[in-house]
Amino acid sequence: MNLEAQTLSVKGTTFKETFAIDAYKKTCMINGYDDIDYLLSKKERITAFEAERSY
Image 1 (cartoon, one colour):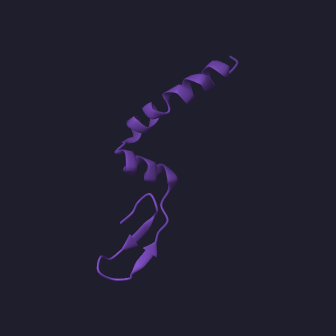
Image 2 (cartoon, rainbow, N blue to C red):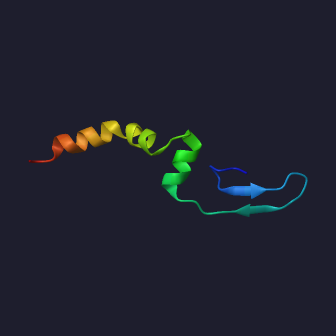
Image 3 (tube, rainbow, N blue to C red):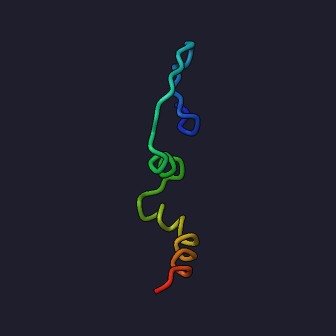
């Protein structure tokens, strides 16, 4: 299985199939993130967004 390419193949055969996966879940699986890790990976963007918001 190649998660980044979203393909599944069977070794020793010509079988190859593609599959769909949610971009968020794909990112989490590739990077070993849980929900909190994902948010922490976006900390700089979240902080910048909050700094630009007017209160």
